[in-house]
Image 1 (spheres, helix red, strand yellow):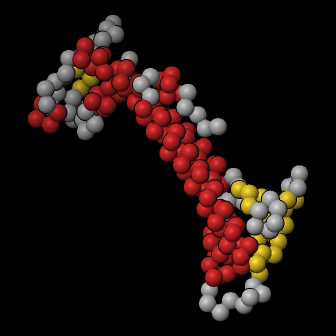
Image 2 (cartoon, rainbow, N blue to C red):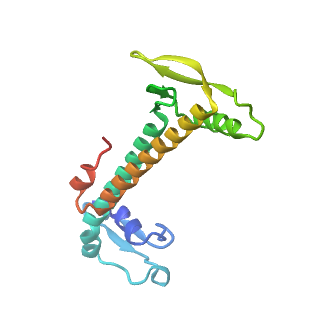
Image 3 (cartoon, rainbow, N blue to C red):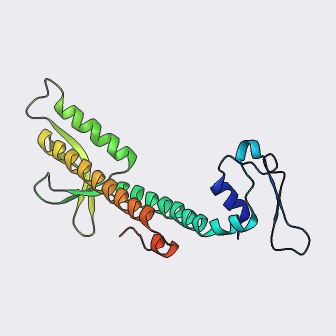
Length: 183
């Protein structure tokens, strides 16, 4: 049982060494809690009260770990590329941060006043299996559709992340928290 974690959970502003001391006497597996700052933290909890909070601490820790994992999964999904049929058939588009910036610049350029009706922009995309990547010309309408599809892809990943995060926070056991996974 991690008594320091329990105290951090129950008293987030408590600083060991300044607001309390938690120590084990020789040969004991139960800690002693001393020099409790009652002015800042209120009444000193008993060791049994701290022990009762341990399941809640474990659940909270599992939730935080799972939320971090899901956040990383969402980031990877977002930058993992997306499909668009803006060119008439499915093409794979990259969606890393630089790719998103380049797509935004291309969409904006296609919408500027005075853009000729013959506007085209080269954009990196792939077709086939295995994927063959190339800079392919896109008309204004095509690059704008790629932008719409990119936004839809990102929002779908964000929605999945939000839904799974809510499931994690609603879970009442560590096992239930760990069962919420990105698929």
